[in-house]
Length: 123
Ligand SMILES: [Zn+2]
Image 1 (tube, rainbow, N blue to C red):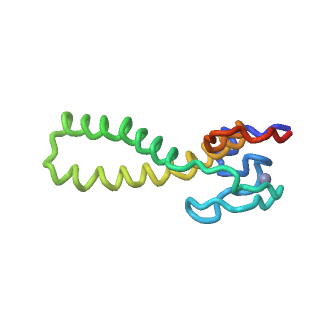
Image 2: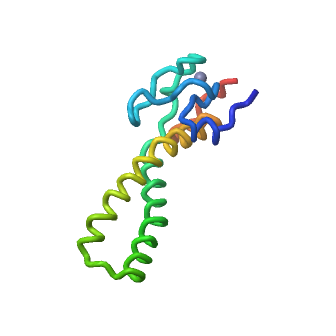
């Protein structure tokens, strides 16, 4: 049965079997899946997850801060107290599932680094 990249990614599970956890630290991938033995070193999401999480933070948190400013009109130090921890918590919460999701999508679509010469097909 095919594993859904969306489901496996958002649950931070192996994109091959959907069972074994992919992380061995906060953001470090394991080298092999504990459940199926899949080699998890073949893909690398790079900076993609950080970009998408920062972009989501921009889209959600900046409007919240603006509504708060225009609705409540708090002193500036209130913004300094509220928004940095909210932004950090938002980013740290999303980073793991988004990284695992991008990894699962790379796995599913067999994405790799761009090369000048095509490698022979492996089927
Ligand atoms: Zn697995």
